[in-house]
Image (cartoon, rainbow, N blue to C red; front, top):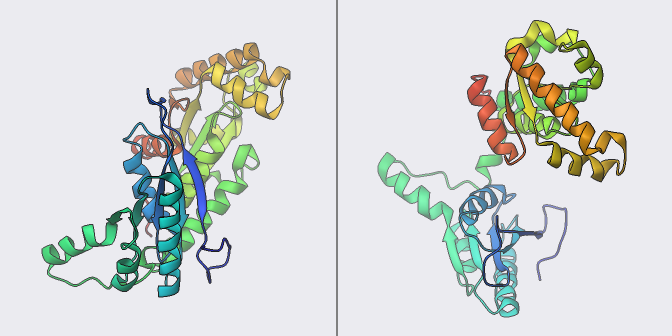
Length: 299
């Protein structure tokens, strides 16, 4: 068995079960999917998950990172085979193993093996006329220290300016998210910072703002940077009740009032906005980047 560990000296297994957008008509057991990598496994998992969402089936998803020695590769092979025996059907494997020696071991498992490196790198080598470096974990190395530091700075900025904690240095913000409490501002801000190096502040719209009929005064000089998030009252009530069940804050009537007032204010102020109700953080972030004309920070 592959030991579960937080140490990079041993491979670890991270397991989740994804649900279909709507349940299949027939009851089927979850198919096991492995994301195998010599690094963190994030690339394999991201690509694999994007493909799997196209199928209305349940999947048990397991990340197997840091497969960087033959012993770990054989451990991964056994784990994959054991899953197949347990499930009674072949597991699916998405692999970003760079070293062919390790990839050749894991692909011997009784599974459907999807080699993302071979699929894309070899055709690119032919097209570009250049051999790839075949360097393990290269996509996650700090190749450009300036870009890396920009991302760290953006994360710190977003944390400092989360939920209206500070008006300091707002001129440095790339985008300022506004919306009622629990409409998705904080996770979106952090995603923009971590993935794109975007300095994102976020401010809650509260009853005092609605009574005044104006945005918080500290935001007025930066209206061009503001983007709004909304949500359906029903969904907002569910989210708030998970936090403060039975409170006025979570009451559906109050949620309806706040959403109505927030959307009216954003329309009145000419603020671009979208509903986060059925959108993922990735979709919300992509829309914001397009609307505010932002791109990944590289300098």
